[in-house]
Length: 152
Ligand SMILES: [Zn+2]
Image 1 (tube, helix red, strand yellow):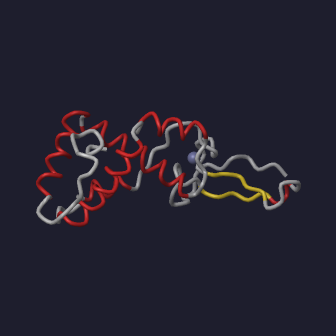
Image 2: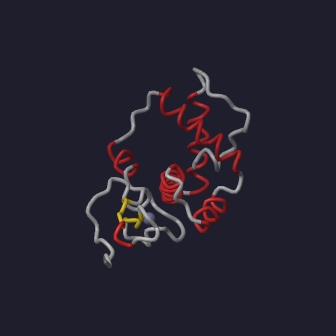
């Protein structure tokens, strides 16, 4: 998120020795947005990525993601550069950062309704074939959460 908001040129490629340049852009992005907004947007981006990978985004989530990251190409470059930087730079992630990475956020109405569980039917004409899967955005680890009422 910080790179997205920085002056990072779109054509920049990570190479050994460029770490200080990338770090300066990260700090520039944090200065522009504030650390709280960088963390909030990163959590939304991660939640959206998890839902997108599972093909479970809603139209509202797609719209929220496009509003937040209006320049799709820039967002793609920023994500790729952030990954490269993390691998190449040698800056260790703090435990707090690792902990935050386990808490995605969801922006927009979710298929789970915020419960963490999504109902699925093995046979859409037979309500007794109902199963539930964990929501990748609200319950990525499939932990016990209050489950919705099951009607049989
Ligand atoms: Zn959800």
